[in-house]
Picture 1 (cartoon, rainbow, N blue to C red):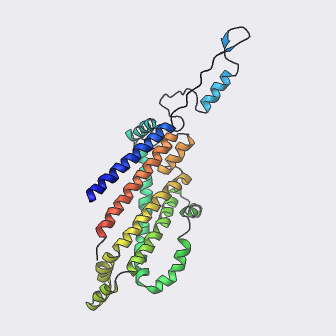
Picture 2 (cartoon, helix red, strand yellow):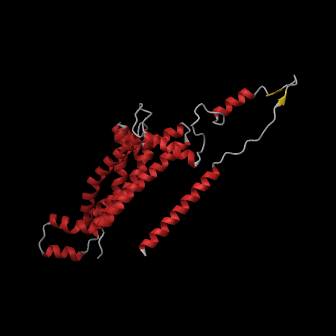
Picture 3 (tube, rainbow, N blue to C red):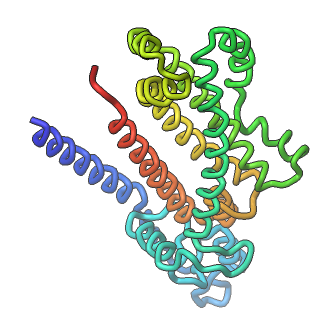
Length: 299
């Protein structure tokens, strides 16, 4: 039954992909150019009007005229042009020609590095504090108002404050990742710890298990599915936020690459960056999904 479902879902996904590519191809087909005859000048010879030079320059500025680069993609690309641009970016992912001209591999590495640092800092704060909140009703009541006020604030709203106080764009982006990652982990850890079955805690108390052993051998395995769920949500949010943060701070990163290509009016590269962001996000989410299955148990 599972194999049949996997086959049917795979075929349906393939069908949807083919339909999307077909619609994309049809939508990006160039419109047929009307054939116009030459005008007859006063001397009786066929020619063009005096504004033809100006019109040609205007067309070139608008990306409609002949380009000096025959491989340049103007406007929204066709699927074939997109594949050509993507292959060009992936062919040399780690080249470095200066501050504003780096390969996509280098840009992606900068983004992942910032996410990893901010995310690890959030783990170091959120999981221990979540344990404490989940095990102490007093701490839960005392800290819950602060959590409920700070949690809904958009992570990017912290960027001006971070830039003013830290005065470093890279560290500010790491702080933004930290502040957006800490809340889902904190809330889910506290929820998982508080939801551990009382029977298991009573058995540990009867056996006179030390608090540290009880936390590591009883509470942590029981709360692990909820903790991993919080970590999974936090990673998704962190990957979303770093793209927007890099658009603001500039310099390096996949978000900066996307914004820079938009400023260059290279829609093909913008689409490539969007697709790459989606693929990396899917890989990260899949990794956490598999980890979540390993720690999930059946009662």
